[in-house]
Length: 115
Length: 111
Image (cartoon, rainbow over all chains, first blue to last red; front, top):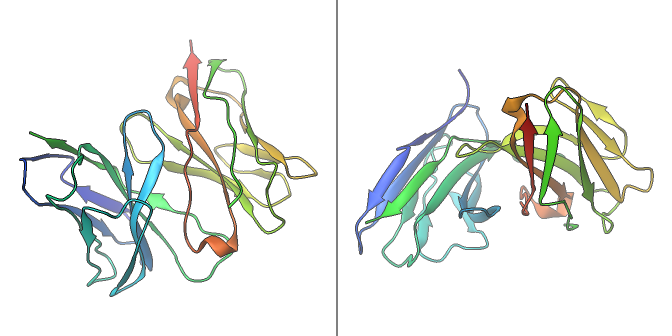
C-alpha cells in the first residue's frame, strides 16, 4: 500500500536528550513536511523540504533539525534546545513542484512525551 | 494566504447532512479552498478542494459562493465516524507548498 509511515507511535524523552522521529513515504513525492500540534490547537509548520538535500525552516523551527538525504525519508530530530517538546508530531508529503494545486497527505503521527 | 473563519464547534444528527461553513472574505482570485479533517489522535485527512466551481467527490461536496468569500463543506449523510475537527484552508500559488491550519470546526455527530 502506498502511504506515509511514522515511527514510533509514542516516544518518551528524558530532559536534555535528543530524539529522532522517523517519516517515510513511498508515494514518490518530492515535498515533505513536519508539523507540530499541541492539544486543542491547529498544526504549525516546523520544517519542510521541496527536494532531496534541501529544506527550509517553517514557523517554529527553533530546537528542531531535519535532514533529507533520500527522497522517501525526512527524519526530524527534537533537540535538547526545544524547551517544550511534548506534542503530537505529524509528517506530510505532497507531489511538490511549482503547482497551483497542492494536496498534502499525512502520516498517523508520533506523540512525544517528556519524562 | 487569505485567513479563514470557522465556527469552533457544531453538532449534527446521524444520517442528516452536515453543513460546515467557512468565511474567507480576503481570498484572492488564484487561491484554492481546501478542506481537511482530523479524527482524534490521527493525522489530518484530505477531503476536497476547489477554486470557484462546486466540487463533489465520494466523501463530500464543496459549495463556493459566487463572490468566493465563503464556502460550505457538505457531508450528505453524516455518520458517527465523521466526528472530527474540520479545517478550511485557503492557499495560493505564492505559498509554495504550504498549508496553514487554523483552529477548525469540531463536528460532533450524535445518534
